[in-house]
Length: 285
Image (cartoon, rainbow, N blue to C red; front, top):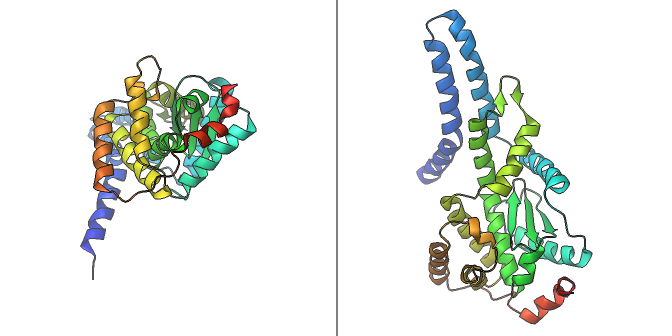
């Protein structure tokens, strides 16, 4: 017997994944076929090839996504960020990340957690499982659960493939996909630019919040830490924050509070401020 619920879920996922790329190919094909002269059709053939390249970007495999994320990570370290080299801090953040990754919706990809030496209160993620958290954010957090909430949120972007979808849209607009194929260097450079300079959409932020809260709760961390950290940054106008480029922070806080209230059975791990300060004491020197 056909399980129509599962069938409809699969169909909707397939439709979202293929609809826009197929539209690109169809438009290019229709332009070619509708051209009144053979010479004009030849001129428009590159559009069809570009549509095929866009289709390739849209349906990138997990392995290729990880490979692309690795290349972006290498470029980031060469040009944009300086990785903090203190082994105890890196090990601590890695430990938090690994705990969360065990409850991720995408456990099939290898997550990489790195600390960036920067006093700006910031965190970000690239595709393929790469998560970055600034030393400035670690300093302002009150406890481990707050740090975990930020990491879980960034993992939510990876789980939702937000960077990958944003890259696909930008690649179409910027012409990265050409007659000669997809320019890998330009694709990597575009991905780095998107991560550092262009904020996520409101929809993506809400989605990352929901995914992050679910991972945080499943791991046993206190979900209230996600709210407390957002409130702290929202109310401290003197602090340059990760939330400064994230739209609708007040609304997001309300949404998170409603989700927490709807699921009262959760853990309270990670709220020990003294233990947290002991783990990051090297940053306070």
